[in-house]
Image (cartoon, rainbow, N blue to C red):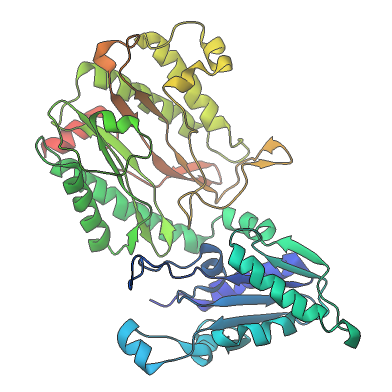
Length: 433
């Protein structure tokens, strides 16, 4: 499905206006070999796609600011033989019309044509330091312009990281982006429900992962938004466990952190539930504590609140609850100040969400936590990870629980986009069918 070119043209115009002068150059992602003669499934660069809506590899967008702004695209030429093997290519002429560019060139002409746009420009913006090969190519273009100095041609004297502008713009989602994120959330919510009902003792983690992958694709998603975590028993205490190969045992919990990407936008959901459909007393106690922490954290998300407010709310609830459960000992304030709670809760309570599952945008501005504004999207994901140890009550050994949902800041509060069963009662009722 071809995107609405006007949306991307308007974004480029915003960037050009913010720059004021100079040139911005953004390349899409390279294809990555998987083995001798095959590649990993291709996924475009998020910055490039946000500016263009163009999904083919070997492409570069150039934005010229100033009194004569220009939108330029370099892309692959049409090639009948390669299109027989690999599929359709737009080619420069069709891409110019379909994606609202002023000029387009063949990708192979990049080194010959792009330096011309840098001549007598005061600044060049690109994503500095992310790809050394790209840095080297950019330096080659600058040197090509510098070589014309005797002819009175000047090269840009300032290099600016393009993320200065692009991260700020990507941080607040527009209606088009939110619609795609809602669809990603719907597909992912359905997949979690399917996974819960497919879970039973004797199956394997990878079988449940397969149920989710099927649900993602059948829902119209291009792929998972990230590598799925399907972690049962003690595996749930490994934050980024991705082997997904253990048999599911009666009495264990299963933690699933998995979601779909739709229209290049990610969802991000975690649910934890009993393999046999019934929480034990200890599992219920820990689960309800994590759920209370998440509820408290979500309640802080509103315009004007600070990025760290959800984390502070979750930490306070979790720490007080761990004292009640006998996992920690002492005054709550002292345990928070000393960081003692981090033995069982060692990560932050969320991150920005968008085209990337850990999306663009700083969390602090001038050293202070960033305030929320409408259109920001984030995860809220407290957890507890209780490894077996001599000083931990045996009933809590190897309980790992995380509950994660996707939240968008609205004009008067927030909206939770993801809605798989969440309470103990909802999960147990759902698993009974």
